[in-house]
Image 1 (cartoon, rainbow, N blue to C red):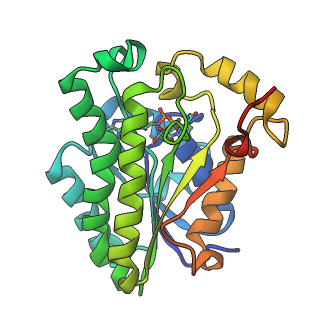
Image 2: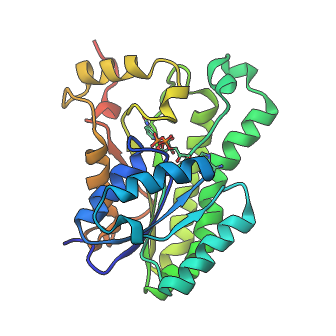
Amino acid sequence: MLLADKKALIMGVANKRSIAWGIAQGFRREGAELAFTYQNERLKDNLMELLREVPGGESAPTLPCDVQQDDQVAEVFRALGDRWGKLDVVVHSLAFADREDLNRAFSEISRKGYTLALDISAYSLICCARAAKPLLQASGGGSIMTMTYNAVERVVPSYNVMAVAKAALETGVRYLAAELGPANIRVNAISAGPLKTLAASAVRGISQFRDVVEEKAPLRRNITQEDVGDAAVFLASDLSRAVTGNIIFVDSGFHIMGLTP
Ligand code: NAD
């Protein structure tokens, strides 16, 4: 059991297809104790239904957290402090952009949409890391991880404003890793290949992205939630004790390809 005695907070389960839910399964298998946040009451119902289906799921702490609300972010970590007194792992698996700002031309991204996407998808990692730090320190250190996509170094049609948000997120990973490293807190990102989730449905052409990966990626297959979950287990576990500030690609190797004839 790679995560026995570890306490992990998982942010970003919307439904059973969520990457965060795949990570939760990996963590559960390896013996971690889990807590979850949900964005709103509608998604709370989804989460509770999922938790009812797994042994012991209903005893997991579940807390509201819209990451645009500073008071909700603070309350999550206060409540976990009361309950556990410490924390070992934070999984930040959330993002949002208005559909219009994903679908129109890049040069047409609105100021409002840009600010919104960057606030929810990139700034939130910073405020969650800040709020989590005392609890992670109470464990003698810990692991923070977030989810990115490689529309940062390469242009991916329709990714638009979210590509900029992911660039900011990845930079945030490196700066947080540098700052929090002396406290033995590691910060990394998993750069996942395309998966059909609620968030991904806002990006036009996700099915075609998956066709291209299957045909052209070195491993000639798409990734699964379980693939991401297992990489997340590594990042949460002591096996990755010297790994920080990294972007780990779980994408069947697609990111190494230049031209894909
Ligand atoms: P998802 O829709 O299942 O999860 C997105 C989550 O973001 C939801 O739980 C939603 O509630 C949450 N969220 C949105 N706005 C929020 C807010 N204001 N406050 C709190 N939570 C908020 O989709 P997913 O694909 O599992 O996305 C998880 C992460 O993985 C995202 O960062 C996404 O960009 C990233 N990612 C996804 C893919 C993919 O192809 N699906 C690939 C690489 C990276």
